[in-house]
Amino acid sequence: MNNNQRQILAAVLLTVLACGFLALVFGVVVWQAAPQWFLPPECRKSAAGEQQSPLFGEDEDEYPLIPLPSKEDEDKGWSLPFSFGGDGSSADDSSDDVPWWKEFFFPWAVERDEREAPGNMEIPHWDLPEGVDFDTETPSASVVTGEGTTSTVLLLDTSGSMDDDDRSGKRKIRGAVDTALDFVTLLRNENKWAQQPLHQVAVVDFDSSSRVYTDLTTDMDEAEDALRDLYADGGTAMAEGLQNAIDILANAHTEKRIIILLTDGVPTVSLFGEEMHRGAYDEAKYQRFKNEVLRLAREAKEKGICINTIGFGIPGKEEGKLPSLDEPFLKQVAEVTGCGKYYRAEDAFLLRDVFVQSRHEVQGQVLLHQTGEVGQNDMQDLGIAQVPRGQDYLRFTLLWEEGDLLPVLVDPHGQQVEMDRDDLLAYFDDGLVDMFITNPLPGDWRVGVYGDDVPSGETVPFSVTVSSHPGAIAGVFGPKWLLALGCLGGVLVLGLLFLVVFQMKRSRGGTHKMYARPLPPDFARINAPAALVTVSGKVLPLTRRQYLLGRGPGSHIQFPDQSVSRHHARLRYVQGAWMLQDLGSTGGTWVNGQRIQAHVLRSGDQIRLGDYVLYFYQRH
Image 1 (tube, rainbow, N blue to C red):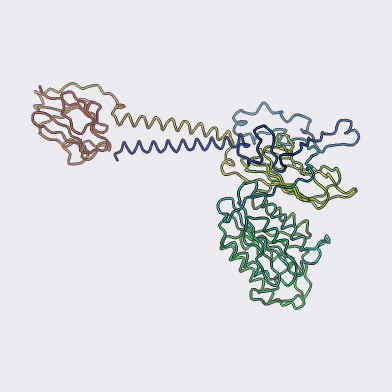
Image 2 (image 1 turned 30 degrees about the vertical axis):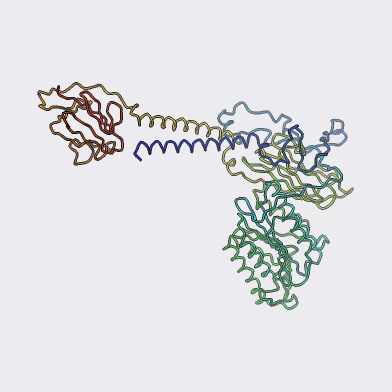
């Protein structure tokens, strides 16, 4: 392959790459401009234009938004916590002094009133028709692998102390099971949003020994059945339970591998079955039991496994007795892995909150986490969740204990999230709401909670966690930046196409500079039968019968330039004529604009070797 062919091939490859870049830019722009094209089928609009709800069947009833209180209602005591703008102005108000380039390329840097107050909170209406079963069907797979996948082992303490009540009066084992069931529901919802089984879970317990109730599975029903079989009894074989969890995750091929270790006590059974009773406290034995767990935590780190530890209960220690909950030890277990975290939950509701918060942290960036209490018809404004640009989804999870609470979410355009949104996938159950907004608008989302059915004179505790999950490419550039990059890519493609055409014409000798033909030499003066004349008029008499032309030191006529090959061509006198022959040069040998292999020269012919141009003249 000669030099010209290599240049043409390189130009073609660069053109293909540039076209691929433009196609990628176009795809991402369309993703951001029309996200509904990429939504799961159950979240799209039908051909008739009717919304297919992710929760309801074909007979779904339409529930209109409850209107806001009128002026008369406000005079009677109705009020909303905020208005559309702090000074009563519209969200469309903007400054005329903002430079166009700043508003086009850096809209997040332009201060506007709507960023301070996205919109009004209205009384939500999420009531579901009676008798409707939630569609909990989710895809499953035998092997989960690839980017964005997770494997989680729920490692739960089922020792005898878990049969005690927490500070709220609920049995701790019951609270742990209910919380784990909520966690499995979150995983099911994530798989359903992704329309593929990205997340799997296993259930392991430990009391006087440890058992694997279910290996890693994407069948969330199987995991729920395993959790409902748990009961409290015996000691605390924490090390054996951790060993089982590590063995399970060692064979997983997901991007993230996590152990959630929930306990209300301390290790009292060693890996070898040696047990220590609370009434017979032995400090040396206790340290040995803890060191077993810490050694396993270091093993988990070496295998890329994270351990999140949760202390369930109230820490305390009496002289000469085992501590009820050793927080420094649990923190150390989590920190040893380098990616774990310790959480504390004193009762069952806080335990649910901890599990939800930990899942949001694993999957994305937590934008808002609030706990509180709400009463009947009470609208609580929890503040702003600032969503970065280019997020795959915005997730809103609401927990509560009793009654009915409703989520409130207002996007940066002032539109309150309702069931008819194209980009919404939502799960409603007693005490749990889990919502996904696909490809959310960047900016300020207002978050709130409404007490829809709360016992009279009482308040209900709640927890709200809002997070977002970044996209692969769109998080780096917005659509306008991508448009600018697309234009740049277009210029690049045109330039490369021009280069291809230029090289093709050059390969035919059609694009070289035209030179003024020099005058023939004075043959009487040079005393030679023929001569080569440069464009500058320098005469090279041909007095030999054969000449080697090239860059090499052995050439009779030497051209010190890389465009000429070392042995480029041969010029020789044969049977009364001068013949020019190419010697396999890289750039070729050209006569009158045509590439030749061998050619009989005529007086006045133009010869080109690389970037050198000569004219051949012969005595008549």
